[in-house]
Every structure is written in C-alpha cells, then in structure tokens.
Length: 365
Ligand SMILES: NC(=O)c1ccc[n+]([C@@H]2O[C@H](COP(=O)([O-])OP(=O)(O)OC[C@H]3O[C@@H](n4cnc5c(N)ncnc54)[C@H](O)[C@@H]3O)[C@@H](O)[C@H]2O)c1
Image (tube, rainbow, N blue to C red):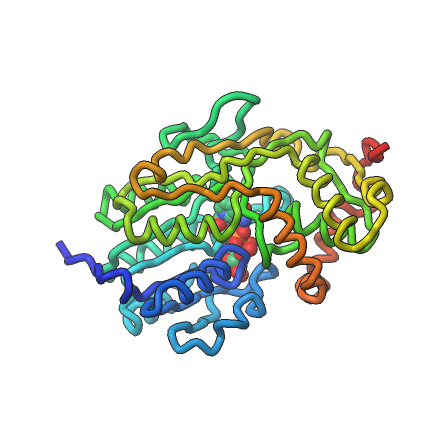
C-alpha cells in the first residue's frame, strides 16, 4: 500500500476546488491568513457562481495559484497532482442551487457526481493525505418540528441538488472502503456571510430590498433553516483537515434555527436602520408566492454537531444577530459587487423563477 502524503499542518499543499465561489473563497482567505506555510491551488471552472473578484486580496500571494478548469477533466487534475504534490483535496466545487436543479438537473449530475468521481480517480493515482468532501445537511432530507440529524441518519434527499450531493457522499464512501482513499465528509448547514451569490435567500433579499423590488417568499415563509456563519464553517473545515478521522462524517451545524420569514424581517429591520428607510415600507415588499419547489422544499433542517464538538473541539459562535447584521452591512457596502455578479445570465434565471409568471399567494399585509 502507498504511504499517505501527510505533512505537518504548516506545510500543507492544498487543492481547493470551487474556490471562487462563496464558501471556497472565504476558506482560501481564512487558510492563507491563518497558516503561513500552507499553499493553495484553486481549481475553478468559473460558472455564473464563481467570481475571481472574491479573491482579490490574495491574488498576488505567492502561496496562492488559480487554475481555471473543470473538476470533470481528469487529465488536467492529474497534471496538477504531478506538479504540485497535493496532500489534501477539499472539494467545494458544485452546482449548488436547489431551484436551478429543478429547472435542469444535468449540470448537477455532471459536476456534483462525475466531478467528485473524477477527483477520487485522480486521488487513486497519487498518494494523498486527506480528501475532504464538502457536503450538506440537505442529504438527510426534511425534518418535522422535532428532532435533528446525526451522522447516522439515513440519506433521504428530496431535490436533484441534494440527490447529487448524497450520491457524491456515497461514492466517496466506496472509494474509502474499496481503494483506501482517505476521505472525510463534512456536512454543513446553511451558510451566511460575505460573497454569497445573490440567488440565495439572504443576499437576494438584501439586493431586492435595496432596489425596492418584491421580496419573494416561498409558501408561508415558515420553512426553517439552521444558519451557520461562513467563517465558523471555514474554522471547522480547517480542524477537520488536521484532526478529523479518515473515513468519518462530521456534521457542522450552526445550532441556530430560524424560519425564512424571521430572517427576512430581520433584514428589513437592519436595512431600515442602516439606510434610514421606512421599516413598514420595506416590509410591504414581502410577497408570498406559490412554492416553486413543491414537495422538494424541505420543511426543516437541524444538525446534531456533537461529534465534531467532542472529537475535534469545534463549536459555532452564538451571536447570530450580530453576525447577520455584520453580513448585511458588508452587502450594503459592496453594492457594486452585487451589481457586477448579477449581470445577463442572472437576470434570465431570475425571470424564470420569480418573473411575471410566478403565482402570488398574498402580499405581506
Ligand atoms: N452555501 C451553503 O449554504 C452550503 C451549505 C452546505 C453545503 N454547501 C456545499 O459547499 C460547497 C460550496 O458551496 P457554495 O455555496 O460556496 O457554492 P457556490 O455556488 O457559491 O460556488 C460553487 C463554485 O464551484 C465552481 N464550480 C462549479 N462547477 C464546477 C466544475 N465543474 N469544476 C470546477 N469548478 C466548478 C463555481 O464556479 C463556483 O466558484 C458546495 O459543495 C455546496 O454543496 C453549501
């Protein structure tokens, strides 16, 4: 058996895929700042969700290299492995939006399943220390009002997005069992923070509120998500790389359950304070629409993260309101960033989901 390529944490050579997206770009900046000897190669296809502007502050860092490419391209990945002698792969690259997966699932199958398989195949040819698969709480499906998901909960994905993520997790497991590839799976809950593409709830609501557009809420807005600050997630993944046990799964939850409508009301309150706008006028933009996700819209997620707490000593920070306020302030300051990332393709997509054809259920009043 080949010897695993494990060096001290300070000398890690990381292949980060999807590093130009929301969590990946936060992670790259976190790691370069925290560990002075870590070097990172960021392999990203730059889909609509990938944006090199997210990485401006590290683009000239000698320990950082960007490679534009697709994780389904085995030749390219093999070449990168040969040149850079990676000891850890962290696979963030994915198609990530549930609504898009319901419009067209093939890019999700291609990137999330075939892409992960391709990376694992490359890992088989080289001696890797760790392969961290970035997964999601959505693989477990939906909860009612009670209970939470542990790492042992069955996989019951309800959308093409979550089904492809669950498939990738199972393929990772089989490469651990079958080929001894040193995989670890990290399943986090809903992240929030700077640089999230404004198709996801929090930045979408901020953008629309600022533009005086409708704030579209699916169904009754009572679906519950467990919110995790993105930098807490980066800290957890860093710890998983260094201290996680190979072959294991770790839940990374925010321990912070909020209904969508609670989050939207909070956003309206903060924008009203920060921008001196009439609170009631902002809230009157809230529009309840027929849920385009149908039965694929999970009611509630909640993660039990006691395993990562007990084994690795990670816990999320607890001040959701101040973190969210900080996040909203970031978007208010970076309104030009929002404008730049939401050009042509975004508008087309927005029309498909929220355009004139959506069925309004009721206004906020
Ligand atoms: N955002 C969340 O709340 C959340 C929660 C749990 C898990 N996750 C998981 O975390 C990971 C990152 O999520 P995110 O929100 O940062 O996603 P994102 O959509 O913001 O970014 C995805 C990145 O992957 C890149 N990419 C897409 N297809 C690619 C391909 N074939 N080859 C190379 N690069 C490709 C994109 O260009 C983009 O930079 C995903 O695997 C997602 O499933 C996200």
